[in-house]
Length: 167
Image (cartoon, rainbow, N blue to C red; front, side, top):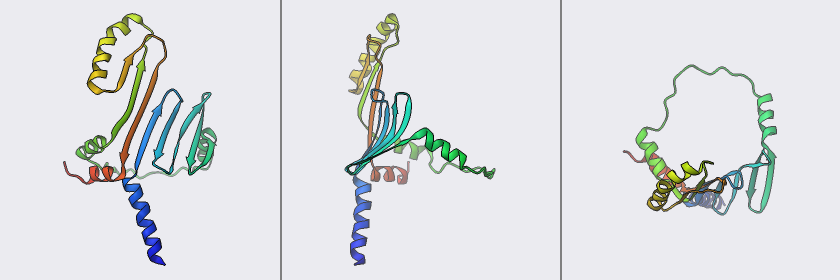
């Protein structure tokens, strides 16, 4: 009987280790989301200038008022004095570099308008060159409609390897 539980725990750990997750920032939908492959997604959504915490998992959807959550935690918070000890950061610069390089940009859309046609005209060739060089959609536009969409993906084993690897 305990073998079934052990296999279940190992299966979940392998799924979390090798299953991809993504982080998405989208200015068109006013949202910041974290998505876990086949399980669900969660994030902060700005709807009519009001923030919501939304979680969708396995066909269910929950939504909470983010301001209410923050105000409740501030009311229940007891002031505790922290030690003045210096805690060093657990990762060195090589590990941070490896960690950043382990992420892959799946989608990057940047459409920018400076509201100055002359400046847009000056920046247009530079943005065209950056778009050709990176292969991502980075544009200067003249329609006064700014947009930023970034979708970054990674897997658990890549993060662990980046932290463990020496450099």
